[in-house]
Image 1 (cartoon, rainbow, N blue to C red):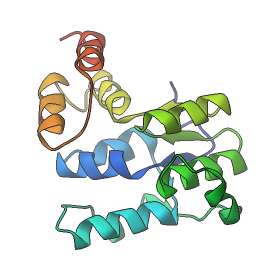
Image 2 (tube, rainbow, N blue to C red; image 1 turned 180 degrees about the vertical axis):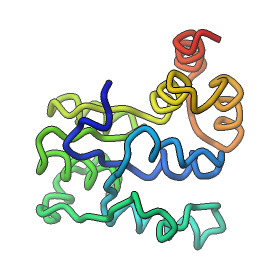
Image 3 (cartoon, one colour; image 1 turned 45 degrees about the vertical axis):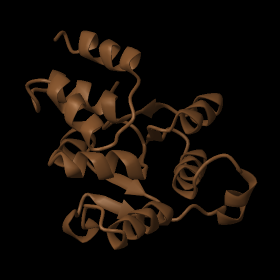
Image 4 (tube, rainbow, N blue to C red; image 1 turned 90 degrees about the vertical axis):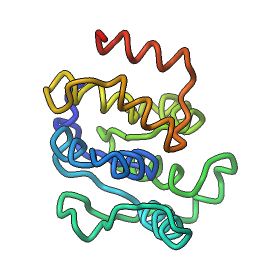
Length: 165
């Protein structure tokens, strides 16, 4: 998957949060170049920070652009997703050829139903390994789980096999 060739790469909260906590946030920039995040993602990170969660300071990353979807009134139409996921999908729908970075299963289904290419945190880690940015994926997955990132054991084993570990 050629990530940098996508017209726009739009990222949700979870990949930013967990990769930051693993000190691996730079792999997004190295793999994707510039990314866009909606205002709702900024708000979610701010709330997490206020609750004592270790969140990235977005002002430190000039490769992250904050953009609001034009159709913000449509956010309330999607009841089953968080505001961050919804705004990520709205931005992608407004910009054909975009790719989204999402982990939420239902958000991924919405993306696929709308022909929006999707990659998640585990996909980024596999790409990072294939690009030589990380040497092993398996210990990173263990650390992610310890930090509260949910991954089923079946999917974890699939990712480890895909990483040839």
